[in-house]
Length: 107
Image (cartoon, rainbow, N blue to C red):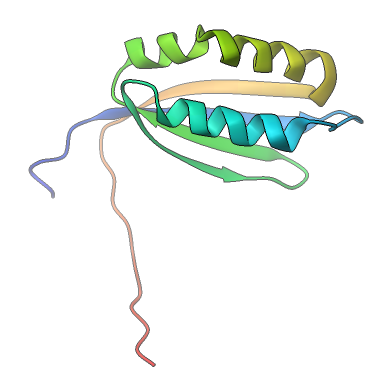
């Protein structure tokens, strides 16, 4: 196990889009760039098809709270509720351990 591992937090945002997605891609890109500028931000992963899944990573709960209350992000949240999403669910989880597999392919 990596002795320098420090627990962190993941915000898991799952969603289903409503009929209108006008402006959604642009806002999504802007929010990702804005999140990268926030104190405590560690990264993001996203997959979108029938169910959208976006996971952002943060140093602590305070960083997550500050991001949720950031003014431009508040506008994006409202637009999501009024225009883009028919449903969403947010989970905040503490990551206590992580590991990965990476198969190296030699050509």
